Image (tube, rainbow, N blue to C red; front, top):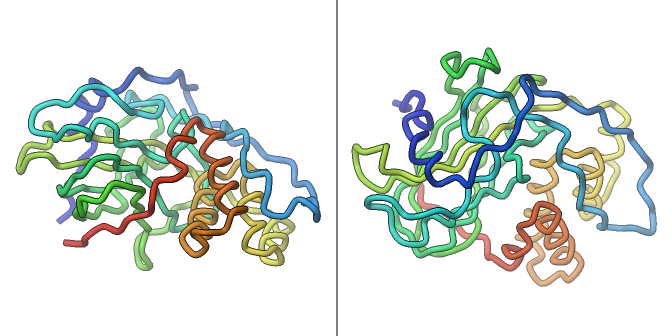
Length: 264
């Protein structure tokens, strides 16, 4: 059975590990990006972007990308450097009903990790949380970038609603307060028919730049990460991946390998 409000139990330690809370507005704002025609000569380029198209709600949950800090309790050394591949605000848009989430694990850690996605029916009240999806998996001990996909059959994200996602490293059994959490906000944006047609007709290498142009973070990452997996030696893909991570000040992770996790 999914553990209700799992990331809320972990909030005190998360706040201790965080460098601080980012300033947020009282209600999320979706910026409608202007759709421009792609440059036919700029194939696979332009994956940096302005990722502030979604201002996360002000609920008292951690804001800003949590990274660094000190190790607390039973968590292994290095685990404090676990970093979500997200903008500095830890908030972003998606066009996908079942998005994918990426996390960098820098140390040799072989511990269970929980992923939770919750919907907030009232963006200003954390008590109005409805858990949408939860899964637990095990890290294999290999440093690198892991990912969690929303599987077929999971409740799809609804357009315009606010969701909070979290990765929780479970450092000790039956002690959620002794865990490290990385979390943030996601909101689904509806694509216009014109943009859908552009994406369908575009080559795979060009789709990340289209998503980036529209400030749709999660789809930019997913489409480019998939190219990086399939073409690890492609210099253009590697350059674009580095450019994307540089745009959110995570360029130091550009050469990190993609690693698998072990399902329970």
